Amino acid sequence: MQFKDIVGQKELKEKLISTVIDGRVSHAQLFEGAMGYGTLPMALAYAQFISCRNRNGDSCGVCSSCIKYNKLIHPDLHFVFPVNTTKKVKDKPVSNDFLLKWREIVLKKKYFTEQDWYDFIGLENKQGIISVHEADNILSKLSYKSFESDYKIMIVWLPERLNQTSANRLLKLIEEPPEHTVFILVTENSNKILPTIFSRTQRIRLHPLKENDIVNSLKELNFDEKEIFTASRLSGGDYIQAIQSLQVSESTKANLDNFMQFMRLSYKNDILGLLDWAESMAASGREKQKLFLVFAERLVRENFILNKKIDDIVYLGFDELEWARKFSIFINENNVSELYRQFNICIPHISQNGNAKIIFTDLAMKVKELIRIKQ
Ligand SMILES: [Zn+2]
Image (cartoon, rainbow, N blue to C red; front, side, top):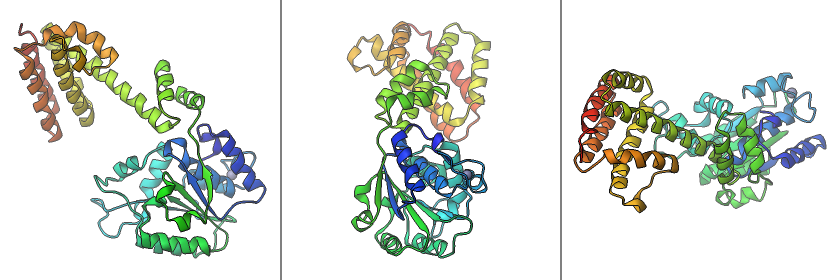
C-alpha cells in the first residue's frame, strides 16, 4: 500500500512522511478513526514507507522491500487481528491461521469493516477476539532479529478486541519493546483500549474524509455521477459508507428493472419471454435471487397499499414510487395474498438449493395468471 492509494488525508500523509524523514518514528503508535476514513490502509502505507529502500515523497513501490509489501509478505511485517473459531479452524484460533485470508481481503478490498472481515472468514455470528494464545505468538514473532529492514513492524488491528490477559502481555512489550520494533495499533474505538496501553502510545487521529476526496475517488469506479454526489454527502466522510450506499442503490435499481420486466411479460402473457426471464434469473447467484424475491415481495405489498391510497404508509423510494403509481392498479384484494405467497415460498426453496430454473419458471407461470385477476 502506498500513500497515493489512500483516499484524501493529505495533511496526515505529509505529517507521517516527515516523521520518517526526520527519524522521529515513535515505537508505539495508535492510529485512531473509523475504518472508512482509511485507518488501516494508512497504517500499512506508513509501514511500507518506513521500510522502503528508495523513498521519494511516497514509498517507491518497486524496491525489494516494497515488492514484498505489495503482497504483504515482508518478513519484518507482522499482523495481529481478531479471529475466532470457524468451520475450518476449531482449536485456539490465532491470526496466523487466517493470514492468507487476511492478505486477500486487505489487498482486494483495502477499505473494509470489522464485520466484513468476520463475514469473509466465516465467523457467522461470533465476535472476533485477540486471545492470550495470540499474545504468546506476538512475543515469539518479535524475538527474532529483523531480517531485512531496520525495523520490525507489528500492526495490531482492533486492539479493542484484546482480552485482559493478552492486553497486559502486549502492554509489557510496549513498555520494554524488543529492539527496532514499531507497534502500530489500529483502532476504531480508543475508549475501549486499556488506559495503560493508551497512555504509552503516540496518537495519530484520522478525521472524516473531505466530500471532494470521496467524490473524486468514486468517480473512478463507474457509478452514476449524480448518485456519487449524494452518497458522498451522506457518508459522514466515511468512504466505506459511501460505497455501501452506492451498492445498495445500484442493487435496488437492478431489482426494480427486473421486477418491472417480469410484470410486463406476465401481463402480456408472453410465455416465451417469461421462460427467458426465468432462465436468466436461474443464471444469477443464489444471494441475488433471494434479494430479488425479498424485494418483489415488498413491492407487491406496497403496491397494494398504494392501490388502496394509504399513501403515508408506503415506504417506496422515489423511482419505485413513480413506476408503482401506474402499476399498483393491477394488485388488488383478489390477488395480493396469493402473489405475495408465491414470491415468499420461493425464498426457502432457493436457500435450500432447489433447482432455480424450475423454481423461477414455476413462479412465472403462476404470477402471469395472478396478475391478470381483476378487482
Ligand atoms: Zn520501495
